[in-house]
Length: 157
Image (cartoon, rainbow, N blue to C red; front, side):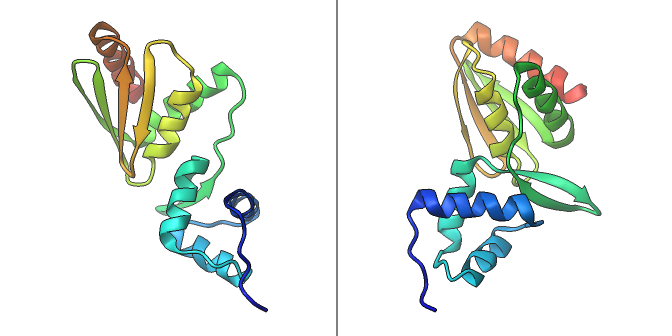
């Protein structure tokens, strides 16, 4: 059977279906799983898809993780989940003027950034997430200072 060329939306839907049903812990495993379905992808493409879908890596015990969709509904749920992620995965927060840099465990930046974005706070202009670092842009220097205090409080629980 020849390889299927799916649109980006179709491919991302397949990724969501796969991680909803199976325990996938690495990008490589996801690439292999898609290729088993005759979907031709590269690891770079899957990496972009994971970031765009804002998938989170959840601990499953014994140092292992699995990809999952970030499930949050109401504002209180987002704040509770954000607190849990900050306590478990955020290592450091630093600030320069209105820019904050949040350092996370490897692979967890996009999940934390997603929840920060879902808060839809006026004092946060936006976030940019890498693998283990998030840039948070505060609206002003004063709001950056306040956010830094809030983030430190979240880290402590």
